[in-house]
Image (cartoon, rainbow, N blue to C red; front, side, top):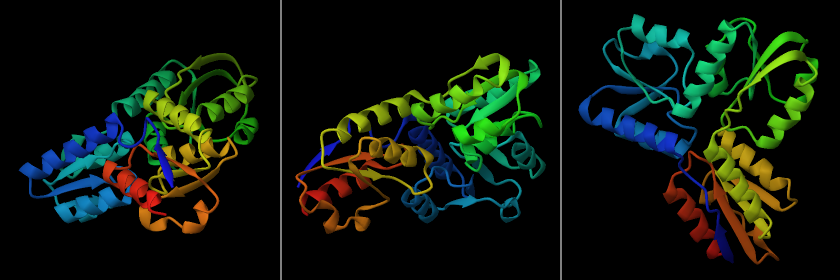
Length: 277
């Protein structure tokens, strides 16, 4: 089986930065935690756990004075206040590109706009961004959801960094009739654009696309969705162990791409396993 790798796949700048930050902190401190998974990849989280870097959601499990690292997706200001109350040493590994919509939402609120976040309401990044707005802040994930929100005088738009451009445009087509005044801040990360464009191009050159990454990773899920729009058979897996021989019968070429939280070694393992099928 011939395998083609996407030009843009695997760790992005923000993920590399967060992982290096956590490893550095662990080298100088004996009690290091991350608030939630540092990134959405189970293999990395498991490796961190082995190294003594524990992912926690319940601060009752964290002793005062411990080091806690804010995950790449960020957290709401209320959570940061809890860190201070517990006297934790805080290291902020929030991706700089996630910081932007956080800051924009706070400013939109101050300027009298109703902030609207285009993204997945239950995703940690969106929860964190929403925390920087007030009670008026709205989250919409689909054009259908956008159609149900009420019209407002002034609307400010930010976007989850890993959203697909097509979903952003579909929602904006609906929101355009919901206000007389807009401030639109397209905060989709450039790395997301590159990864999706590269995957889309590759999908047109192969018989099957294998998308590698955590099942709870938003950017990986959107990568798979982008590939599916081409009509090519697309499979989303977390590791090589999920590959099935039946997927490749009658096919000559497989394309491999990966989400921003997927380590290089997993991508290589998947590619090598496909070649042997």
